[in-house]
Image: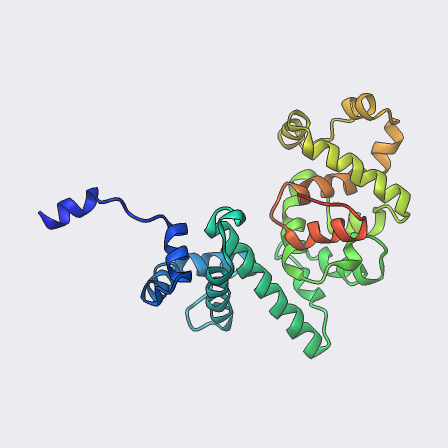
Length: 246
């Protein structure tokens, strides 16, 4: 009977539990971290593209980051799990960058996907190319982008060799990509057909077909970045192009 009655008791939300912990409920802090270890492993596994064990150093970083999220969370930050996921990813990226600086290495070789050997040859050129590729400090998001672009017929080679080199052209391409992303009808059409709605863009933005076509693959990459959780790439666009990406 006790167990049956407990089912009907109103349980605290995750956000309420976090608030209680911040008020001094240390016992539930340990319980919460224990309960959400699978969540922490999942976030890290998705980010690092490999299964994370409890003995993995990355898991220790994730635990610390999750606890940090508990400390820093407030209701204005929205859903706690979304917020904690961002903190975990951020701390993992910080660690990878720190490791890279200590070893004086750029993990370009790890950009190579298992089924696209050409990626490695062209990835070596990234750091010398003016454009958003040259500012990417982590292999994680660009590897995901490379995978996502395959469906749209765009490769890393295309971006390195054919991406817009001049800032004005790049700015225009980002404007076009942002317009498609923010226009729900156009974005859905793009995601469905895997093609840019060139005719509609010419009409809406008063631009020529040549403007769209000359940066077509770069524009596709911009849309896919904006319509993703590739935060490091969004941060680059926001910083380098002086834009605020939502």
